[in-house]
Length: 346
Image 1 (cartoon, one colour):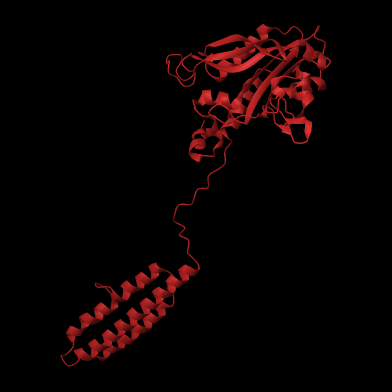
Image 2 (cartoon, rainbow, N blue to C red):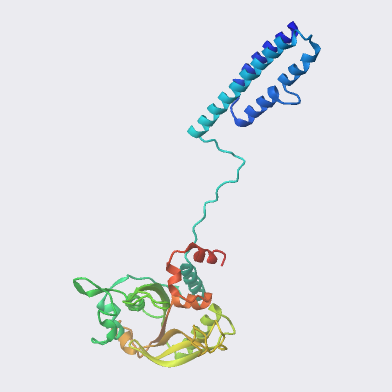
């Protein structure tokens, strides 16, 4: 009996010593099993030892064991509450959990598509030019042969700077062609990508702000054949070698002769009369082009008797729609990550 009483005292001291070092719920559970476990717990062993005592001694030792059990249970609960309060105060980090992935930024699909266009022209010997988005009437219209009363100059089509009739948001990147020809003499072989602005009501194929790329070549002996060869090579590299291309007569103030360029429909391949993209025609208008008007060359002091050139332009957003087979241009600018993430691996 005395031996068991001594063991009870030792176990209490051992428990108190171990309880001081408990710092986590896992350590608390280990301490609980060590003393109260049903198979190998210290108190279970003490209870098993009662059968070796006389009937008179058992109640006395049993009472002391129960008191030790109550003490241990109470202290375990107290430690558990302290741990919970500490966790609420300073949450612990489980370093075994997988980390949170921070999504990386990526170029906008229109930027990526513009870079693809630039790379094709780089390989064809072109350089990239840039210019101001706020332009003067001279560079945006007058130097490009737009007559004074041309509809494009009206304020329901062009966005003018308030209080300044001679300043506007450029309606195309053609002003950069004039600036480039003013700065240097031929040979010139450039493309001009950038934002342009017009008073447009947004719909699936029109926006008040969109991206455009234009090209200009000026040199001795440049002909319409050079224009056709350049554009056919570019369009087949951008779309497919199998794409069909056609040129139709057109008119632009700054080129003569001028042409609209169409490609075979990239969605229905000309086989669907109900196609929403080509409207059953089998063709998509992709860009405008032509030979630089001699008057435009005169405006920048380039001799049209010695030099000739061609120019072309197309909408980057609209062309991206055809390449990616997207039905609404506004999708590029709605900031829907589900839409934008489709282009991360392209």
